[in-house]
Structure formats: C-alpha cells, structure tokens
Image (tube, rainbow, N blue to C red; front, top):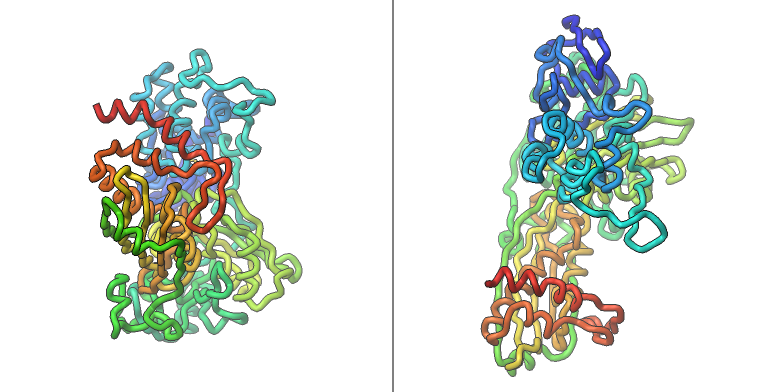
Amino acid sequence: MSDLQLKVNGRDVSIASHPSRRLSDVLREELNLRGTKVGCDAGDCGACSVLVDGKVICACLTPVIQVSGQAIETVEGLATDTLSALQNSFLRHGAAQCGICTPGMLMAAVSLLNRNKTPTKIQVEDALGGVLCRCTGYKKIVAAVMDADNSAPSTPLPEAGNAVGAPIERLDGRQKIDGSENFGADFWPKDAYLVRVIRSPFAHAGFEFGNLEDWKNTTSGVEAVITVDDIKGENSFGVIPAFADQPALAQNAARFRGEAVALVVGDADKVSQLNLDDFPVEWNEIQNTMETGSALKKNAQRVHPSRPGNVLTGGKVVCGDVQNALAQAAHVADIAVETGFVEHAYIEPEAGCAWLEGDVLVILACTQAPMMDRDDTAKVLGLEVDKVRIIPSATGGGFGSKLDLSVQPLLGLAVLKTGKPCRMVYSRSESMASTTKRHPAIMSARIGTDSEGHIVGMEFTGDFNTGAYASWGPTVSGRVPVHASGPYRTPNYHANARAIHTNAPPSGAFRGFGVPQAAIVQEMAYDELAQKAGIDRLEFRRINALVDGDKTVCGQQLYGVGILECLDGLTEDWHVANE
Ligand code: FES
C-alpha cells in the first residue's frame, strides 16, 4: 500500500492504495465516484473514460500511481447545481438511452470541446470513437455534441408541446447524464461480501470437488464456499416454466463451458484478488456436441436424457397447399442459409447485490424481468415468493438477454448461507460465456411466384441451436414459423422450426426471437425471384406487401398495415443507390 495524492474534480484527495490498482477501482470503490462505469476492464468499451490533465484515458487500464498529482476529471465534475451545456444538449437530444455509456461519452466529448468549440461531425465521431454505445446508433450522441452550445443545432428538433413528435425529457434522463444513476454494480450495502463463481472450463464435463472446507479455512478472506448441496429448493430455472431445466449450480456435470458449479464468498478486497485456479475441483471432460447437425445424428449423445434426439420442441404453421402451388409456380427460389451466434454485448455486465430485511431476501440487480426473477429465484432457494423481493436497478443494455436469470439466485444463495449482504459483478468473459445468445440457425426455404412476380407459396424449415438449456428456445421455434413469410402475402405456406440442444451456451431472446434469422432466408429468396421475374427488387416487395384486409399465414386479418408506406419511403434512396 502507498499513500497517494490525487486531484479529482478540482479537490485534493489522499488515499492509501496499492499503486497498481486500477484507477477505475479507486474512483468507484474508494472515492464513491461510481459515475465512471466499467464495461470490460480491458480498454475496449470506453465506459470508464475519464480525463487526466484534459486527455481522455481508460481508467480501467490506468494504474492509480500513474495519475498521482495529475488532474482527474470524472462525470461528477461536469455539473454541480446545474447541468453543463453539453449535458443539457444530451438531455435535449435524448442521447442517453440505457445510459451506461453516457459518462464515458460525455468525458470524451468534453476533451474535444475543450480544444474545439465547433467540431465537425467527422471530428466528433473521431473523438468519441473509443467509447462504444450498443443502444443509440450514435446519431443522437453526435448531434448532442455538435449542438452543445445550442447556437446552430445541426438537427432541428420539433417544438416541445402537445403535438405528436414533440420531445419529452426522459424521466430518468438527468441521473443518466450527471452520473448518479445506479446500475447493477453501482450500489451495495456497507461491508457486503463479494461473490465469485467457479465455472466449467469445458463444454461438457463431469466434476468432483476436493476438500472444500480445508480450502476455505486456508484461503485468506473466504467466508463460505457454496455448491449444489446448499440449494434448498428446486435447482431448475427457466423463463418458460414448463421447460425450466437450468440449474443455478450444476450437479455432477456441466453442460456448457462457463456453467457455474460453485461460489466463493468473502471479504471483497481479498476475494476480488484471489487466483481461483487452485480451487479444489477435478474435471473430467466428456465428449460434447456443439453443432446442430451433430446433435441431430442418430447416435448423438443426449444433452438432456429426457429429450430424445436433442429436440427441445418445435413449431409449425400450415396454410393452403404449398406443394401444388410450388409445382405450378413460374419461378422458384431454393435457398439454404446458416447463421451463427450473436452476443448481445450490452456494455453493463450482469451485476447486483442482496441482503436480508427480516425474513425477506432483497435482491437489487440489473434485469429486464423482475417478477419472473422473483418467482424463479424463490423456487431455487426454496422460499415463498413473498419472501423474495427483486429491485431492478437501471439496466445498462439487455436486448433480451437480461430476461433470463443470472446473478439473482447466486446472490440469494450467498446471503442465505452467510447471513451477510453480498454483491457480485460478472467479468466481461463470464458475461459472454454464461449468458444467452442469439440462436444460430440452419434454414432452408423454397418460394415460388407466378409469371407476374406474385408469391404463390413458401416452404420453410429451420433448426435453431438452443444450446444446453431451454431459455427462450420454445418461443423461437414457435414464433419463427408464424413470421418466416415476412410482411408479405403468402397464400400457400408450410413452415417448421425446431429448437435443438447442444453443449453451446444457452440461446435466448434477442430482438425478434429467431425471426431476423428467418428474414435473411426470405429476403435472399425474394432477391433471386425478382431477378428471375425481371422485376426491380424493391418493386417486387411492393407487389407482394401485405395491405389492409389481407390475411397472414395464420389467418389473421390485418388492418393498419404500414409496410407499403415504408417501402415507398425507400424509393428515392433505392434509385440513387442503383444508379
Ligand atoms: Fe449507449 Fe446504452 S445508451 S450503451
């Protein structure tokens, strides 16, 4: 430990800290300046951007000793009683969506505006290039920086008032831009223990623990080690109760790389520094199945013994006589497409804390579904649902993945075992390894038209890799057949989709529940059909677009259909792009 002198937001501060401690940790843990966020701890996301002597740096990559004596500025220094002009511009433009990237964006923008009061769009984009945003698409952020002095707005905004399109200030806008918003990792009770997770290094492996009691007693700072034996309820959660199959902690075998098997709980400073490589567990790697194709082979090992053929479930939609329609079609496109995993990559890793209030377990965590979290967490812990209270923190991006449980039952186990408040934050690697992804898909389709380019029929099949556990696999396999024809009139139709288990991480919800994957097949086939029919590709879609009074492939009669207007809105740009 060294005594260090820092100058933070104009104030002189003395701290005793290890000289190599990350500046982000010192700001957040010791100085309570939690407006500086941590997304990756690797200098990639820029959420931890602060200014040191006016220059932007990643606080997560900077040892605190390096900035001793230099002027450090964080988001908390931008506004005192009133917001700065730049912050007001962020508010006007709605530039903070989830808000987790906003402090970093603001600091990068301040550095630019200190040098250049009227930057061009390219200069703003360049200056903010080291800070990632997963929500906004950057346009509002760039406009907010360019309009910081509000003298010549680059993006005219409609007048505030009662008209449609008039801007309303976000209810939680101010705290997102002054750094006071509490995300999952920003609040914890004093002296809360830290929880860390032991995870499987293999996609499929049996395991046996060594002497956990000895390890706990001889490892400084560790108060408890938790395994499946500590689970008092039903060790099985899942967003769709009929398919719930995911253990909070694996028993005997892990079904995917990154699956949790044990928890280590104790003093936050000490446990955060532990090298967990010597945790007493022996792994026995078992043959795995990562691909849908191999999972469907006749002799493939079952991921879940109760699910024959590794098929979780499937969905089907049939209308008309597709075989006859395709046989009579003037043109047919035959398309096969494979898509891969997509990670949500929200900037905020999963995080939260928990404590007891009387006999009620309170869990504060980032989540998209607090009520579902409560029910499943209570089930795993063996508590009545009214003995579990979930407080959703602000959520720094979720995009579907934070509909599933992550830290909640683990925090609950730690609090019930120790009787003390506990907190945890997934590392970026843990977040990517253990939480849900977009389903990879293997899909094929045949679509036919008459000689004038009208769709006469479509046949679709898709197998969606749902990974080791069900999560939203049933929804994906049920929803894809409903929507695979897109917003187009399809009188004859036959679509099947299945969710297939493998030893990959669980696939879950991700904006569209499998439908974007199916849209790739349908749109590629439409391009081919337009070419075969000699019709402009945009016009081909106009000809087939659903309009008021049409029926979907499920027989639903539609009104208020807007796809034609959307396609019309593209016409001018489409012709320019094709010149
Ligand atoms: Fe930028 Fe959410 S607003 S990551």
